[in-house]
Structures are given as C-alpha cells and as structure tokens.
Image (cartoon, rainbow, N blue to C red; front, side):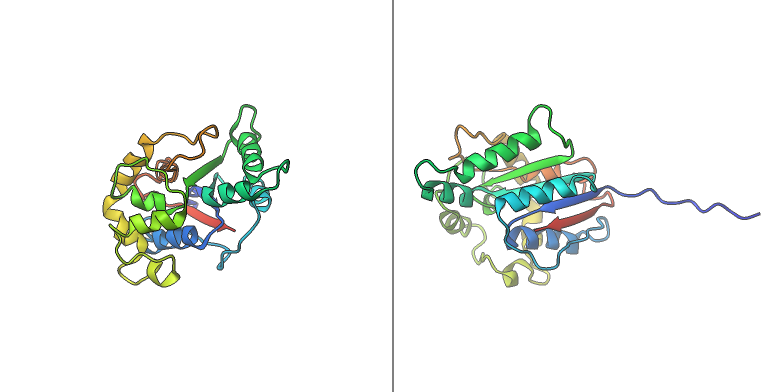
Length: 223
C-alpha cells in the first residue's frame, strides 16, 4: 500500500516594498545571518529607485499574493520635495497621506499591508539600538553624523553593509531588543506633526512568527 507523504505546511510569505539600497542591504544581511531559521527570498537582485506612486501600485499588486506586505518609507525625501513644491501644487506629503489612508484607514481594501515610516531615514532605526531618543534630525546626513558616535565607521555603502562577519545586521543584532523597545515608545506617525524623529521598523520584528526570528518565512523585497 502506497504511503501518503505528508506535505509540510507553507511558511508565511512576506513582501517588502522599499525605495533605497540601505533597506535592501539590511534585510539581505538578515537573510544571510538567520538563514537556518528564516527562509528569505530577495527579488529583484538590484534595487531600483521608483516614484512614490509606483511604490504604492507595487504594494497593491503584492497584497494579492502575500500574507503580509511591508512598505518601508524614508520620510526625508517626502519632506524635502514637499518644501520644494510650487505654491498651489499637490505636494508629495499630501499624496503619501492619501495613500496611507487608503491602505490603513477604515474600510481599507487590504488588511495585510503594513506601512513602516522612518523619519528622516532608516538610520533612525539603527540609532534606536543605542539610544532612547525622540530627537528630530532635519536631514539624514545630520542623523548619520550622530549615529557615528556609536557606529564609528558607518557608511551608506554596500561594502560597509555587507562586510563578511561584521555586516550591518551583525553589528546591530545584540541591541535589537533595545531598538524594538525604544521604537515602540515613540508611537505611531502623526501627519499633523511630521517633524518627529522615529522609526516604525519594530512593526516587522513584532509580526507574529518574526519576533523570535525562528519561524520559517519567505520574504520578497520589491523595489
């Protein structure tokens, strides 16, 4: 009699929509270091810059196929382009708030989308590994200068992020619980007060099954 082979359950599938190499490299290093406990797939192989509207469309597309879609947004670009907008023009901040409300507000079409805001940029998440702070930085460059008090040789380069046995994820991992706790204290992003230093990266690490970095998952990055 033929034995029925047990089909293993499919792990949760996650997609990431990002607009930056740093986000891509950071999660790529998470994959490299946690590959025994986390099954991560990264596509495409090379991140590409896309307009905010294109990112939004990609989020909507991926929401059909994945258990959870995380849209990581660095707010410095939105603020910079909003300040540079001509008087009377629809600003990038207004557009993003519209997308945000569609994806997270009452009656939202997709319940499996999580928007993660870093203000001004992803480096705020790194800083929270070392400091309990709510300080607002006018630019990512100013934030990076401050971050170098803790990560002395920090650079926004592939070489720094992916260095063998000393990549960005390994350098930060011992302080991960502190970063999550510090990020949670800052609460949700408030559009009425966009000049607030914060990172919502804890939303990913608090996702069911991810918090222990033990559940087998498949993650895709879309850019």
